[in-house]
Length: 119
Ligand code: AMP
Image (tube, rainbow, N blue to C red; front, top):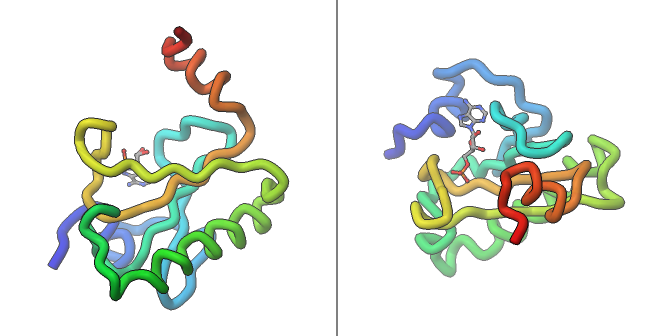
């Protein structure tokens, strides 16, 4: 059982446009983009976070990486993109249903500058 916003999006309870979907995952545009391209790849299985994944999830985790690359190709950014997984409140995780962020269109340095994090 999972009642996160992503579980509701996957079940259709909350309408959302899937820019990609297959039997194991869906991809949606992030509602609050941090880069020109910011997409979330979300497994249908409601694993709360990466540290809760089990050995039985190994194939699914690999699948998510390949699906992310497929989405990046679909969006024309497969030459240069970044994948990010937040794990835990201390790094700002907000939705406890595992997801990969695909970010493209700006560098880490530019992203840090935009957030005022340049050291
Ligand atoms: P995280 O901080 O890794 O847990 O990321 C959660 C992400 O989900 C954030 O980037 C939010 O902007 C995004 N988000 C939250 N609600 C929605 C939604 N309804 N549709 C799309 N993205 C969402």
